Image 1 (tube, rainbow, N blue to C red):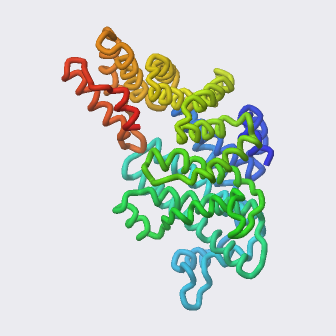
Image 2: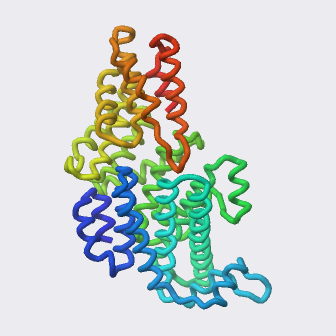
Image 3: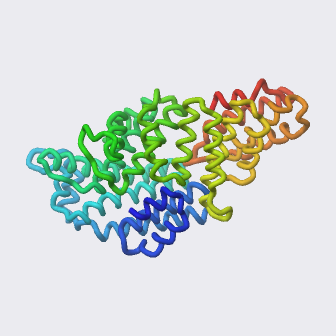
Length: 419
């Protein structure tokens, strides 16, 4: 729990030191170390960070395997053929009743580590083979979550209690799976449901809210190891996914309660500062949002730390707010910082900088905006072997800018609407 609070309070140096020394012996220290390395890899996209993250995930899988209950060949074959109990067989989750608490947690950590490794391999390798190979591991992890969830429901049905850390981990996994898969296009959604996944958005949000302590009327759940991460997922869905992916109206009263509690408990958290700023953006309180993003930028980790990458979330959101207010030159300064220092999406940052300069100076912007537009196509990247849709769109706009003799009709306003 100490490591979780250090992470939420943005004390990244302390958490890395704490987990590093215990990663080879303690199950959750190993998983925490792997998760930290994964986040660093996603923030920097460096080959060294990717390699370190894959090594850490493999070490966690190996450690979890040591703590899992040994399974004979017969049990493995039975698990591969039975689901919810064919005639004469017990359901898959029933094996969890014969495990110790440590063995059950090892099952959970094993699934989570497999997911981390799968996301890393898909993100770095890309292509159909990576999807097929890691898709099997994702399916295996989902099966573990489903069995753990069925076990918890069976225990609750007979009045037994299950430890809160196990419940919060299971509900986080099942909640995220249901939530993310429910966002897929209808045709792809039918396929993933056909191969055995569930994609119930209502259930996913409900499980996350229960584990985070917001749906006690369904059944109470104590504060577990992953409860705050359930809160983070709720905030991410309601302040980002609902608007950016057009998923419908967010539950604003719930968002305000979750953010208020999170900020009260972790006032220095860069993550919760970000969601607080997003909440103000949703309410069109752009001035208040800019002040929060300024705080996020000012409270960044040391400049030589990879965790400084979190600061760039503040630069990005602040620049969008300034664009909406017509403060083009200030927004351009933020995009220029992102373009020169951050590796996430240089094509978008460069187009944003060029658009803001064009909007501020209009035709009298000299050769700066045209020169920036020319570089946009060369700055695109691929994730999981696929081009990023927003980059493809901006490349077309940059080509159109050149074809129209360095002219676009209000590109800054268009970028705000598209984003």
